[in-house]
Length: 150
Image 1: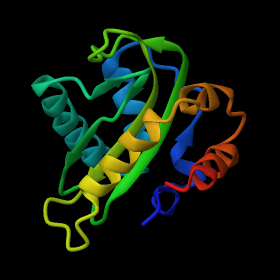
Image 2: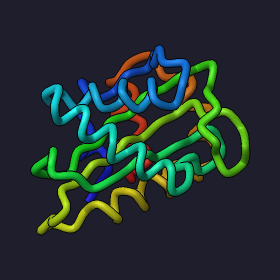
Image 3: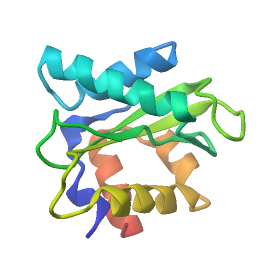
Image 4: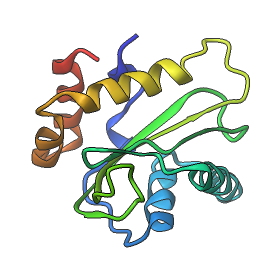
């Protein structure tokens, strides 16, 4: 299993516009192209998850994630905010890179936790934050995932 199998260029946004945690979550959800009702339901689920503790894992990276009936299979999205945003990350630094993961409650393939782990592993590589900041296109994001072999 490789991360790039789960991402598509149309679910990558390199210029997030939001100025709050809620704005960013809504922008990431929009990348999944669900309907309005499912967007709202997913937003509630992600907010509930964030209230348990921030998904900001440090080094400028957050991985908002949840299980929800709004998807029939695991879905992921990536967003970047160059200027950073207070996301209440564990290192108390601004977050620039957001990896959204949404999986159905019952998932036969059971890829939710492995994908979460692979994103965390990818994020820990020394050059990754710098490389993510330098991306010029969604295609470059896909190439970076492929190059890293995650």
